[in-house]
Image (cartoon, rainbow, N blue to C red):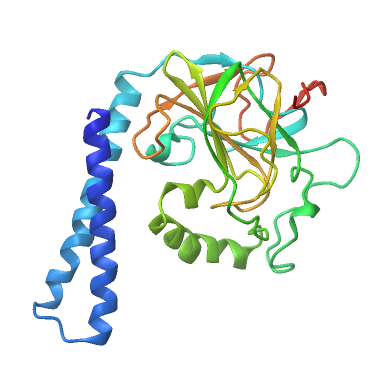
Length: 279
């Protein structure tokens, strides 16, 4: 599919989801003038479009994989990788939102408070300041132009307990999906690296943006800070490269971080502490 075709398909899919949920709500209020089974048609259509888009992007990833783009790491300090494309593609189990080669990383400092472990029973949720990644500077991975920023969503409590994770997967994720891509990635930054490659940083801390659309940034420049907005279990950096700025239609692009490569899940890596301050 072309970008235009993917954009039309995403728009139709969103419309079908809205029709389905409107039908469900209306069914509790009035007698509908058509049989019950007809109300499931929009849902089946939305699922069919999702499967078609996934199949198309999966086929392209297998048969036309883009060449990896060498860039600088988006953080400094000691970090550990999760959901890495070094382990599987697509790394997050989906090609949607340009996530084919996305990676999640969490801070694992040598000194100071450690990252809280997953809680099976208690506490159900933790405040973000309990996680060393929260507030960590996010760096430009290349000289680039800022094409989009968002900073309006709050940083919610963690979802790294069994009860909170079930809530996230069963209820919260579905509600966020209805709100569109920006509700899933939370506060975010999109950079134009040139050559048809774009970088996206998700789950950015609310109120931390130091750049705006149209700004030019240098590699290593601090642009914002790590947060816990959007569809996130805990403060972490979600980073990906894409072939376009629109999350709804972009295809994922592989990356390699200079001096680090692509860390596998559970692999710890360290990046020098130097960062270019915000002008």
